[in-house]
Picture 1: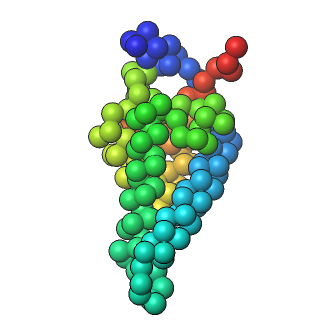
Picture 2: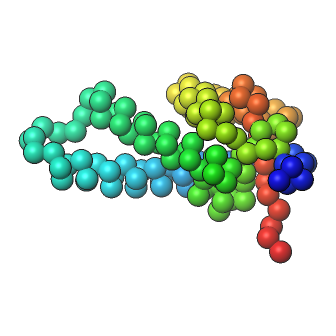
Length: 146
């Protein structure tokens, strides 16, 4: 496994367009997940009130957190990242552990919440977003399968 980490550490950092494509793809998946879980909540909820407010928003946020933390720790790739051949790794090339993935998700939330300004850091020569730099992670392009 260590050899794989060394190999991954040598991969080139992913560019802005590829990362944006993966983010868009994952956004569609998250939206579908939210719709399905909302239908389930409506189905088991007898109240006639609409779903809204901070509790419902926290529920959706936690769903997103679980989605990203699971995929980042399991394979280093969300479904959108797999399509765009991207992988999230630590600076040493290892996959993230659950704690690292959780911290990265929280920092990424702030990066997106500030009108996406954290993503603009990818336009610098190092090619890493602010949340990559703050959490010691890299999004790299994986080679085409042979």
